[in-house]
Length: 441
Image 1 (tube, rainbow, N blue to C red):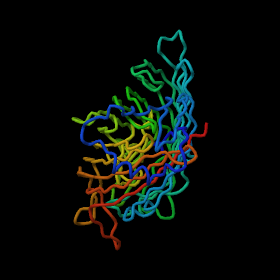
Image 2: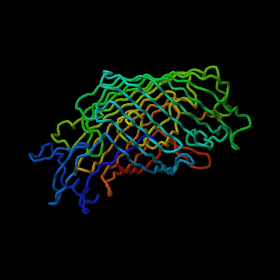
Image 3: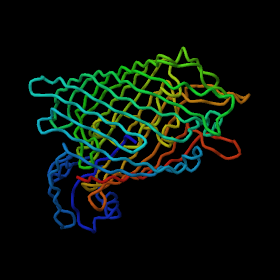
Image 4: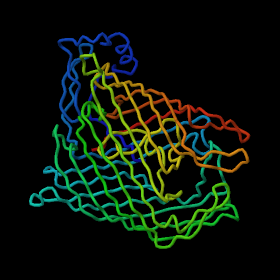
């Protein structure tokens, strides 16, 4: 997964448990809007912080955010979700290296079957221009079906894998407030790759397996990050926005598919266009003069032309995470990872977050999505329609033992379908996840 947390490095007394923090949340809230004269500022990521809690001194040492190695693990639970996704473990290693002069950077999320790596190399004489190298792969040697209204469609099961490299140019300029990940960056890369496919024992005999093919992509990318992040690496103030735009061309692409989804035109899918954008902002809560109350708003959108099952968007793209690159991937509550494959979507979130104590951040979130999804017709065939997906949820992000971080989340999506058994579906689905990460360096 790409939503990798970056666990802070700090030390707290043993008695600071989650129960104590929740007690403080109930008894010491500052909703009245009057900021205490001695209120301590929210500790920011990487900066030293000294305080007292219940008379005990707490010292948070400075942390070099330019060099991070973190391991993340989680589990997603969808009690009435699609088969094989109702309980899904996930995890990844996260690597980030930013040179002291911020002219060279390496970022990687590594999970074995799915990996994503980028390297930017510049110099003092290049005036912000850099060479950019990329690598992505997905090699999962098992068949994957698709889902319609939470019902598995076995007939279209197929193994599909890819490997893409990339080389191009990037331009980077540092931004206020001046942290190592605050920058404006644009890049243009050519990404040569290869896709290969294989049917399984579950694949219908009438299903036409796609042709193995070379695929070349042109990828234009924009990131503008002016966010200040708190101790838990959550957005505290500022904004971020950006987008990704692709033109792809396949060397060999014939008609493929069949069954409920029909046969897809090889001529139409040989070349495709797609673009996605995002924006995130973190602000104070109006009429409350306190740093401990924050509003985080975010929007995500994407649209494409001539997209198919293997080139289109996959939603949701991450479970959590707000670091420099993961923040660009959309979240969709109570939906299984990559369950939806729309050619167009729009998602908005509004989150209220409170800081009862310096390392605990409970939140509530409302979301609204307009997402293309497959739906059954009365005769059993399938059509793609735009449908609304309102959702509500909440959770808590907290420091945890061994200098780690944990997030616990619950959400309810009113628009996604749940599996009621016996081939029956109904709208509305619960979702839970627990996400734990620890910095290793």
